Amino acid sequence: MNPSAPDWILKFLNLFDKKDLLVPFKNEQTFYTALKETGFIYGVSVSALPKKSLGNLKLTKEELTKINLFHALFYQFYEKNKSATNNEAINSIILFYEHLEKRRASFFKKFSLAQSPSNVLEHILSTRLQEANTLLKKNTVSLLTYSLLYLDVLAYKQWLLDPTSAKNYYKQLETAALTGCFYTLKSKSVKTKYDKLLIELFETSSEYIIDETDGGVATFLDSLNYLKSNEDSLEKNYLLDLCCLTVYEDLKMDEVEHQFLQQLLVTLNLSKKELQSSLLALISFSQKYTEKILLFEYSHPVKQFYKQSASTVKLLIIRNKDRLARELEESGELVVLLGHSTVRDLTAEEKSKVKEQLLDVCKTIPSLTIFLLPGGTVLLPLLVKFIPKLLPSSFQENRIDRFNNED
Image 1 (spheres, rainbow, N blue to C red):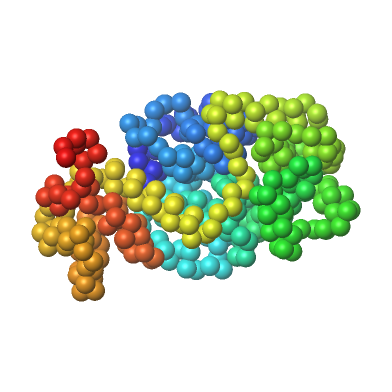
Image 2: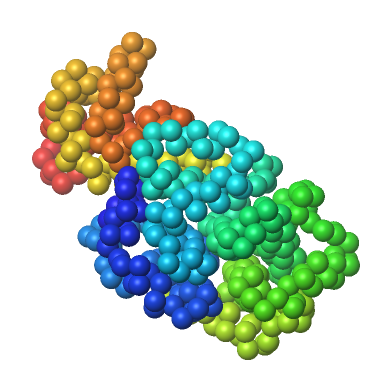
């Protein structure tokens, strides 16, 4: 299964019976715990929930995140619709995102190439990963990793209960999550330069900070009282996990940080045992995968876009290199121009021909239709950058062999 190619949702649902995706989990809490063990709640998916193999491809964290997000939404649908079909589940999830995005018509115009509901949903989920923290807001700096994607799952659950309240629910819980993370950062006795930068960025966003005075923590905690009597602990556990992730990002916890978490426990009506369980799960995951887990990640937006785009293009080329090589061989003029591009700058007319013919090649390979989407052409230079490795050896005569010992 290739989650970066069309029809991966249908392939996923064909690999697993409905019972394989639902039965192993006794209830929503069990599912949440399993989802956390994959790393999805921490924003770093290292595996998918199904135990059965997903195929021979080595999946990226982004692809695993995409699978886990779909599986979580899929599970929520069947919790409320036991006898429904997979097609009904797909259409329901699409309607949910349409509801949350109804003021952004352009969001769904992006998917005009899709031929089926499953393809539409695939494009939606891909876009959610690209815009993980911009579903309902437009002016927040892009700092957040995939940790907040679970808000989609909670909002979808609310949408299934009452569609009219889903958007306000999302905004309220999002504000609680981000503000909670802000005050958790503030509680750190020793702050890194990135902690200070993040706090400054939060403080300039009045959309989320309830109160910047010394009494701000109390005001924030009071705002969570509506969750205290909520028997469904998913929201409470999620907020606690996010705050633990924020405070334990440096793998240390001082007395002030611990005190803030204790206050949060009282407000959410959670036990010390649940705090201990949350921290142990985080420590265990971190030690097992020997990787620093970040809730926040600051980088220049343009550099971040280029880095992610280059990674995506490289992955697509690797997975489609044989077919791409065959298509290039049949495009004589294109191969010649690409060969020339390795030794000189192409003219404007030649660049136009390369662009036009590359798009024609992309049309023949489903995985490369990403370049045909609105804005996709800006990624073509990245495609050109990686293609020379697929060209005949005659175009690589000037490459120095590092293992050649000849003078």
